[in-house]
Amino acid sequence: MSYDSFETVKVVIDGPLAVVSIDRPPVNPLSSTVISELTHVAGELEISTDVRVVILTGAGEKAFVAGADIKEMLDMTPQQARAFSEMGGMLGNAIESSDKPWIAAVNGLALGGGCELALACDFIHSSDKGQFGQPEVGLGVIPGFGGTQRLARRVGIAKCKELCMTGDRIPAAEALRIGLVDAVWPHAELMGKVRELALRIAANGPLAVGEVKRLVHQGQSAPLDQALALEARSFGLLFGTADQREGMAAFVEKRKPTFKGQ
Image 1 (cartoon, helix red, strand yellow):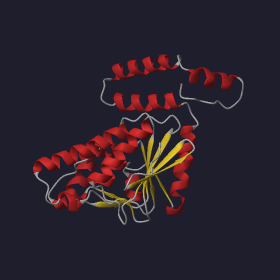
Image 2: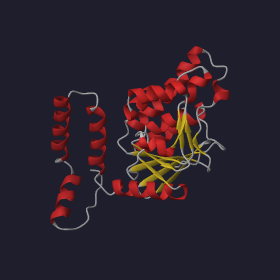
Image 3: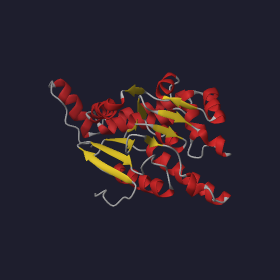
Image 4: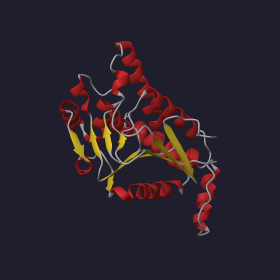
């Protein structure tokens, strides 16, 4: 698969990793074109047998994504605005429901739709220059790409309300303190640190990693007994895979396993 045809998204395949960069300088706003291309990329990466972890970042030094494209939204009708919101929602769902882990490498501003895009990822790592916020109320609207829902699940209901009602912008250190991000690194070290995490994940059985992601997400909305039953079912099913046999054989033989996702 060639990723060279996209106008606003750059994809670099690096062994088992895919590095996806939103490339609309200087602040990488989310237009309908960006959302469409990212959704297409997510679909293509999902069926790739080579890529095991996806890193999502913004091109340049200023922003991850500074928000949705206000110029495009300015004259939208209510129907068009809803369709735009649903389009962003489909992108978030594609990332969240992917079998592959997605890591947001936030290299600057992550505001509005940018914060929401990061929230759809499994992990959020930020540089010390990162800034986060949901400033939509200052425009007379609300977050439209999942902010009121995923943010609450990350930081709690009260803090979510505070951020979405005030529109406050918070630095990476505060985002780490409240649980919005998982790690903060010196700006120059961000991509290296994220790549280290991605490679540690990619070294494991991809079927097992995908099941962990799926079960954790599904379990949050299920009663504990049902969630535990789902876990037991998946545990059993993985014993029918070549990866299980390879992983356990490698452990007994004291060697590194070679997983094939089968």
